[in-house]
Amino acid sequence: MIRFGKAIKIIGFLISITASNFVHADLRYNITDLGSAYWNSIAINNLGQVAGGVAPNASQSIFHAFVRDTNGQIFDFGTLGGPNSIAFGINDAGQVTGWSDKIIDHPNPYIAQHAFIVDANHIMTDLGGNMSFGNAINTSGQVAGTANGGAFITSPTGEMIGLGGLPGLKYSEGYGINDLGQVVGDSWFGSSDISNVFVTDSNGNRSTIGWGHGSDINNLGQITGYSNFVYSSFTHAFITDSDNQMIDLGTLGGNRSEGYSINDSGQVVGQSYTASGSTHAFITDNGVMKDLNDALIENSTGWNFITAKAINNLGQITGYGSFNGLSHGYILTPVSAVPVPAAFWLFTSGLGLLTLKGLRKNKKC
Image (cartoon, rainbow, N blue to C red; front, side):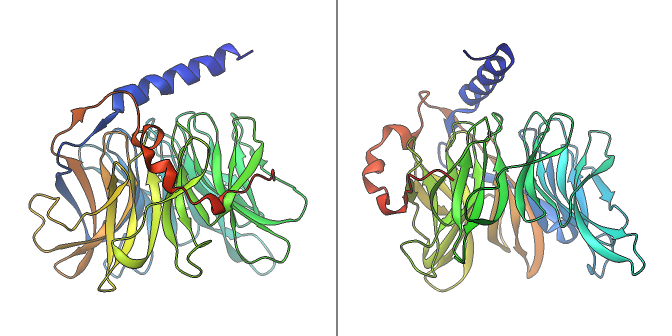
């Protein structure tokens, strides 16, 4: 029997999926230039708030975690006492997670990285752990990340809960989390130097789905990341179908691509090499990878979009590139969108026939 609280959570995210279930009529965007100081723009929530790393001085020798609100106001969160911090995730309540340098009190003081959470009042709280990193945060304020060499999720009261002590497990990292508390990330076993993509159910039970890196998971349980199982040292971005089988998203003509973020409509963003060897940001449209530099963006003269780091349920994208030769952060906002029936391309199309069946692993871990 599903508990009442969990049922409410499920209903809530299904409503949000229905509300956001659209594709862009022509995949055209307006651009907001975040400037050269905010080039490390990594996360965006459904309100259009962006978080990442900002250089608080002109030399850009250090960086601080920041959030940019919908009015364009920038909030520098500072650090936990060390020189640097950076934000990796933001939810719709404005809570932010990432990591910060912290000076450890010791006979020989040293700097270590600690995961943090920032509340809606911009107060940074240390989540603890040794060499810990907060990589993603869901609507409930649960953080997924890595601490002490293992993946973790935080409890409702903010304590880190480890996601594994599994037979043969050497190391693991948590990178994405959805609103049901499912976590995706990487695991290494034994002496292998190749990572397995893992995903948990809402109770924390883990399974692996193949070799590679798991970057993000949406509220339907679709995962994106990149895999080198078939392509040796060359990774390709992937998306999973309803059976957690990896589907190759290809490249923009080069030999490598990486998927970083996925929204509830199944759109994936990331970066790919082109045939000329350049790195370009991409978005997928019904499973087809498209170059964000191919005249998709209004008033983009002087821009080279290098990577797309995150996409929200409205189709807004954030990332960084170069503008007139300088590194700049950006927000892309769709010009228009049209509704589509409540089904996603991956679950209804025949593209599942292209699944890289060899990537799937049925073992529990």
